[in-house]
Length: 127
Image (cartoon, rainbow, N blue to C red):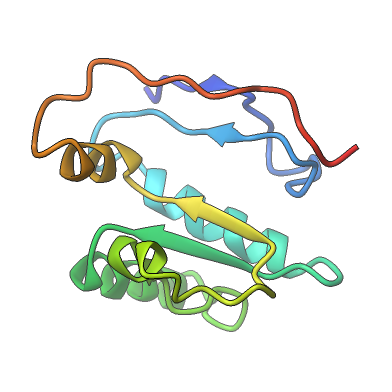
């Protein structure tokens, strides 16, 4: 079963509340599918523009295929790659980013070293 941690919320609760949603489970257990569903749910809201950020174009194409298979391609724009994000190629109109396989991104940033731990602030600034 998927081990979930952080500020886990079922899909029936607001996805744009400002809290970070963390999904943790082994490879092949639906994490990317969850990101696609969350992205579509955010983009269904008024004045919300969410993009999924992924490691590379191959993974972006896979995310696009998942969105199409779920019938969500209208609400899930083509993902942004980590290099595009780091080059500042994300418009200011984007209100939310969903990072898929962040462990792989951290490993790349860390020079392929193992990621032992990470932290984040659970407070929100959205008032």
